[in-house]
Length: 349
Image (cartoon, rainbow, N blue to C red; front, side, top):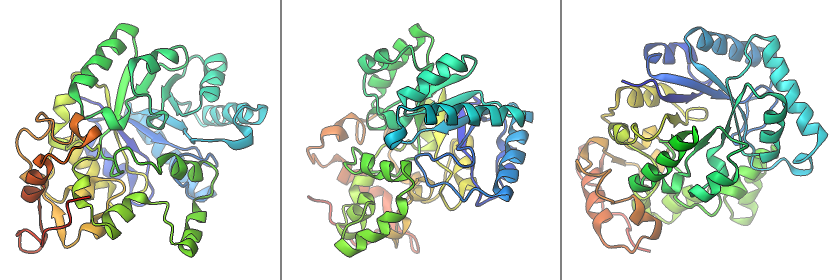
């Protein structure tokens, strides 16, 4: 087994106890330093939270797990190109240094932050966030001087031919590739940038006001809940734990979204062991389990050629409703109680 998992630091389960059985698989932990906004809501910055984070990160370093700190907001507003943002980057890295936790990697969406890091912290590897959404080699080349590593665009990562092409280019350039394997987001979600900007500005709480206008920032929940377009979960961008080995020859790092999810231990174990016998929705962030209930997506019922057949891969970029996804959905969507198929959901547009 390869050591190639990146786990998002979490507080809702004991981080060390969860990760300790899998140190031979976990390569990195990614986290936002206290007080730094990222593309996910951050817990309140308290002395207790900081102490817990520091203890967990020190344990990671003792285990040889690399530290990846995040400056991955989609937008920094008026500070996007500023002395204030540059100072914050310096202060955070110096703060980490004073704690003996200087990061190995910084993942960012900001070309300005990447520039500051390259100029002032050349020893740090700089990685382009998945939220940069670079889609092709021309895009990777355009920022090659700023980034040592890249996360693949989720919308294209199921296309193995595409991944192999980008991987070959990256190898020639001495770059590393990563991919997020358990996203529950809609493929090509038109709300993603809008949603991530709310996080970047610390304004996620504004989403509650949307109820006054019958508006939800969570387009995925509207899509699966109100509109019952359940089949589109197959057309998303997640990779089953069992299929990860197909990507391992071409991708060096597999990111697990675990920071804002109910049971990160199940996710870490599933991808560490390449196996999950249960409801696939429970591995995804966001999960959507309540929207599919009483139905589940039985992870063990997928066809053996699911990842290589093209179903849900490149063809999902421009779905023509050919019927192949419907055939798979009928096999994997079943009732959680008696293992029978629930009433057929709406599978048309």
